[in-house]
Image (cartoon, rainbow, N blue to C red):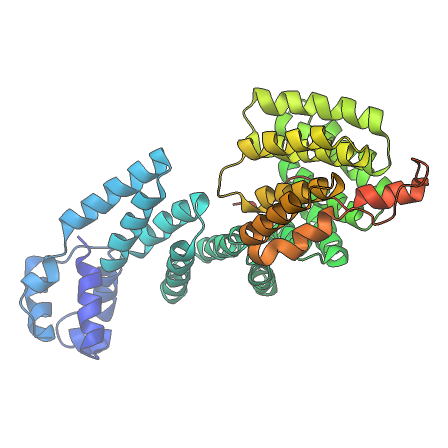
Length: 408
């Protein structure tokens, strides 16, 4: 009934120690067991404690059990239905009733399916509470990892990096280190700190006990190597994931094939790249993976722009835009930049200006980064040919597919 927590709350508000409250009537250890909800006090004990605290006995026992029942129902329904609003309401009630274990469970589930300012604040409050209470330290570390993941999902990558590094500096349990390191590498990659990300991903690989986590590390390494133009190293990382996941994780298997196809385009191996891209595209469509499909379509756009097939490139842009929800401004904005470049190449300057204006509005502070990734080489095509090095430079400027999201 949470009587113990109610007694503790009132005792602390009176400025009394446990010894002072029970002096002459009980041992301090007896009160400690009551406050930690290990035992239920007798009616006689409640009467004596209420007298010592200067309150009516009803104040010790009238904890709002109805609200707690409602909160527990909200929690279980929220978990089953993956409903963030239910989990948020459950956490608020548990917080008001001062039930740390239930607060912790509800905010964990809430943070796994949602990332916003409310989740961030709830995690912050729960972590502070858990550090003051006798909560299992392992559970507190799990909360702190979720806190970093929330920053990542809100695209507050620098704060995610600081959070992950703070956890590692506190000597967390060994089992959680590879997860933190791979999440840290993902955040560093978003900040374009590729050498440091490679170092962290490599360290995470050494500690990995599960294949799924190891493959995530290899995907991260491959993307870092690709951005640093170490094509052979990148291809080797993607090849490992492609081969090892083939019979175990078909999604990661296809994501690795997708990444290898992008590398082939970087190296101007267009025939092999297109064969691979069409295979992956069929898989994405069959599994209704719309965001992955849109990211793959961007490679078709890139190739058609290079080949001056502008009408085809525009059709691909429109097709991909139809796959994306309005909330995916990151990728939707990139397609607007592509359209601007295509219209400019077609001599339709007004349409080009409209598209780039829309891209600036959609991408906001991320506009410069998106532009950097897809900015085509400024060199004019001479006699319809480019040297192999120029082709490499032109294709490498595009962004590789899906980022490595943090592991929950």
